Image (cartoon, rainbow, N blue to C red; front, side, top):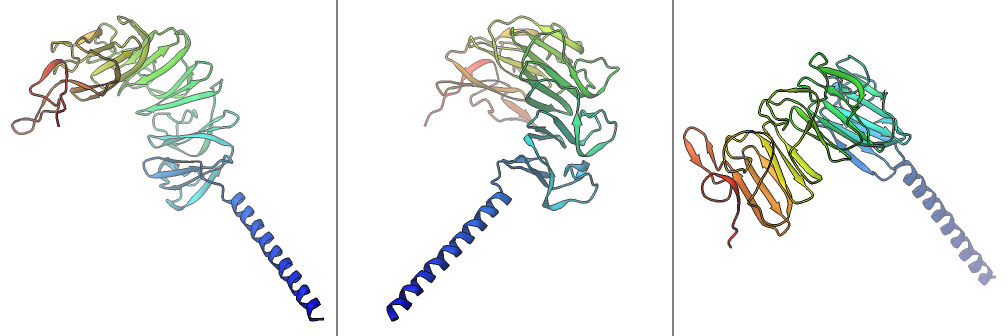
Length: 346
């Protein structure tokens, strides 16, 4: 009899353990489905976004310019606020947020003084995700620069809108603000877009270069220093364009035949051409041996990183405070108008 009771107790124990385990697994599964693993965190200056694998989008932090996307002008939120779903990608910059859905619809919200949401609204800001119309083709890349917006699509089209105060979007001075996407026409298929402080450079599939915007230092490379309010072609280089870097004063271009071209302001020899004369069109930089990997330009100093790990520098090597002080920013003695390798000795 005792043996039967013992066997019955064992069976009840096993069944109870099975039931508890099943309930635990069920709770774990429910927790997993309700709290999906975060796929991506995106940051504005003072607002944070979490995009989950199921396409749901949350935001928390500052609600300035309606950046929480809640449709409310309420104060900031310490807790995540649900915005929307079906989101594939999100871009956040310049106090504006852009979200692309899985069916390739672009939404925008946030600061809108320059029409940079692309929604067609003249409101100072948009506090809820609002559809951006006028783009056909699947979105490949979205770039923002000083309230100007550029969208590249997989069919090699370029759409742009926002700040055109200096003609950087290729429109006349009579159109300082473009508040809906406009397709760039008559230059062929677009491969890449590079932006400067007040200018835009477009590289097409046939390796042509077009530019528009501020040109007071001849940084556009179009042969003069007149501003452009329509895209103009840049000539004077060979090879396919691999990379470009441009600031407010000058522009640098790396091509696939390992050449470096530059143009624009040259007061401190920052073009590396052996003099301090501004250049209106691309000129090739000589005196470099080896394969160029990347270029870094900071103000009036330029550095080339080579594939073999060596570094070239040129430009201004001093800095003026109250009196002239020598800082050696080029990693060697004196200023230099031509590339020179930096020596690293242990």
